[in-house]
Image (cartoon, rainbow, N blue to C red):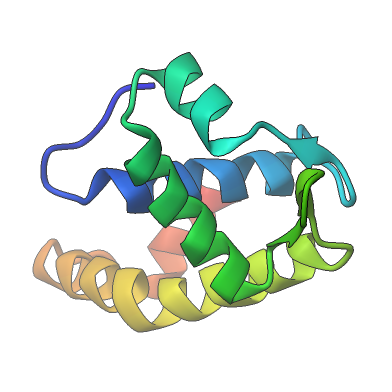
Length: 115
């Protein structure tokens, strides 16, 4: 996994996990690797992975069964989609929209290019 130096690694790991859920690579109720296993597989300190898992747990995307491991929540995909859409509309779209205005790109022209 390649990391962007401008963003905390634990957030990048959590986002990559969410992308894998959205793509269907990881499914509801799948058991995911332990913190140590995953850290070793991507070359990251287990504490960093633990922070990612804490974030995903607080979002409701994964849950822990004591003594067994971490699992993907049944409604993980819905949670991720809702969060990602909210972030897109509040963070990404305003920047994109401003850039399109600066470049003189009309909404009509944009729609033609997208479809």
